[in-house]
Image (cartoon, rainbow, N blue to C red):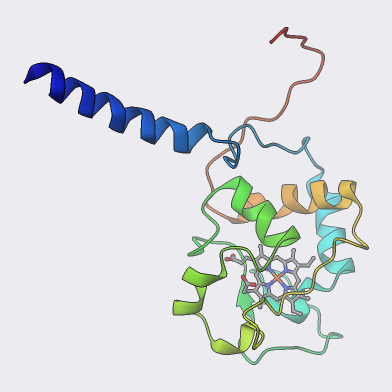
Length: 155
Ligand code: HEC
């Protein structure tokens, strides 16, 4: 009996750890450390405020795309980790399903994709790195361990 119980618990444990470290896991994902001041410029340059509101930031020259702008920062329902913050910028339609329940329909296209503009063709990787450095402190996301270069480890 004890052995069976052990096998069951061990199998469940294996299942849980497989999920955490599977090939799709964001574990270990990290961008190099960015520059917050440069990130603020990126945020204004790409006119994120046309659809978003962020405490302390205004741009009256922009034509607003939504009656109620999508709030950035704070404790968002969807951005809970660093990886999710990066994902919501470069792949906005990802994880839209849970968001649909609590956000206005207008933010989603009829085909279910996000109305958020995709900047992947125009934004440089450096701009993305700086933008995330600027946005991250506005969210209550789990802290990230940045990649430390110069260390060599044989796997
Ligand atoms: C054309 C409108 C539009 C523009 C421009 C836009 N977004 Fe968005 N964004 C959205 C919408 C709509 C959502 C919410 C629905 C979703 O997840 O796609 C969103 C969601 C997000 C989220 C996740 C929100 C949260 O806190 O849960 C982040 C982060 C974000 N946008 C960042 C940006 C940044 C940074 C820029 C500028 C580089 C930008 N967005 C430009 C429409 C836009």
